[in-house]
Image (cartoon, rainbow over all chains, first blue to last red; front, side):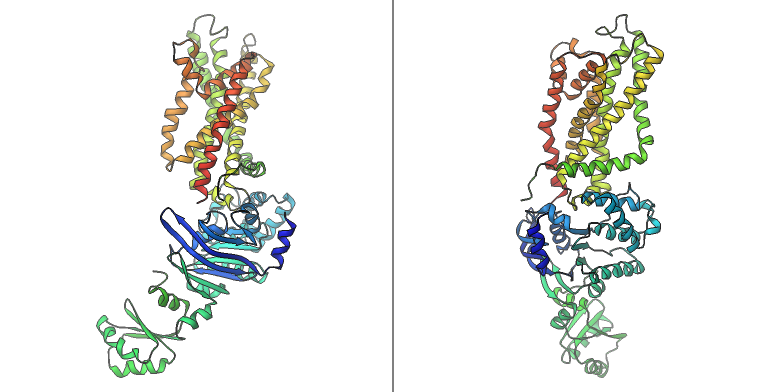
Length: 318
Length: 267
């Protein structure tokens, strides 16, 4: 389209920049002035519970929602002034399946490619390659409704790639899939980043964020409350080791102050006491010495979930 | 700035093509009932009721000659109305087809324009089918009183396209305002059916006392019926008024559903 713009983007290291980005629905502020940037070739994640503003942020990126204020530049272009051009250069995997049920698997790609004004020959070749890529070649002539949930999601991924986008936006790409199907989708997404594509995804699964994202931000109540690589976030916010004790509420009540001295902090989550520490040996010893009856204890490395818990005071998936 | 803009013809074409792709696969199944329905009316009312209508018919036409072209117009209305109500609603709310399209370079405005054109195309296709059937039937069974007697009838398909677009604009306007598919009962009972009955298809509304003719003149199907009847039997210049009426009415209304649909698709 515009040669000048193309050039600018190809030398720019940031694929997306958001500044004081805000979205209001009437008096409800879904996104409360967030700042973030996404670099070329990375996988950037939005982690947060339902209603945190993740989907609204995604929608502003792919043009399904118009920002109330602030700036949002995607592939170097302002989303409000270059609506069509932005959409031409990105791919979108929506949260809800919206494949065209009146079309076959392959037709879904062919018709979708036409929306991008791609020549018929080009789309036909792309469709074949993409079906291969998402392992649906054998189902090319199947009706969409005959596909399993995992296959539909893979077809959505293939559809998002039909225009060979620089940036792919994925809103909860594996929600509702069984573990096997999730891993297959993850593999495909990793292949995409290794090809140099930029990915932005939202998730409320810790393991997904940890597995896929180079950097991520944690969103809650329309704000970004922390940002960094999974490892940085863990190092910054929580101690490396976690001990989980399970016992009666009274016993946990009693145990908490005893182990607190040897730890960097404790949290009560339902039936469990979480103890964050860099010296799990000392904590275990203290717990044993106290003689308080403990049903069960578990040692593990700190995860993103602990970061989330620490920052928001609650679990991510409940 | 997120406002409504004029639809892009290319985007509209893409949406039209999407519908055409699906129609091509199922057209035989889709079109058959739409050919039978006007034929049923033609037989029941044109021939059945017509047998009781005194010699001389209406305005020099036999009753069946009088009714047939009007059914061409109403058939276009029904085709475009179903397309822009139930079918559009399903794409909007149930299949979420439009949500997928607005994430591509095709904008919400283009979708609505593409749907107008598609509804018009369907109306023209059905109408042409029905026109063909009644032409052949009347050549076979009553060559002395043809149902379609003028070569101007060749202009009926493009006129039906226009009529289809007009009714698509009306149907899409209703669709863009409702949130439940059940509400279409109101649209069909309060808008489509009265238009079908009182637009001069089955009896001349002009012969009724005021304000009946004036009210009819203000409604859309009346002009479509006039146009089709005139083209089937040999038109006078007065049909230009009907064409102008349809064009002005359609143009005045066309951007409203575009605006409302954009609001529903882009938050």
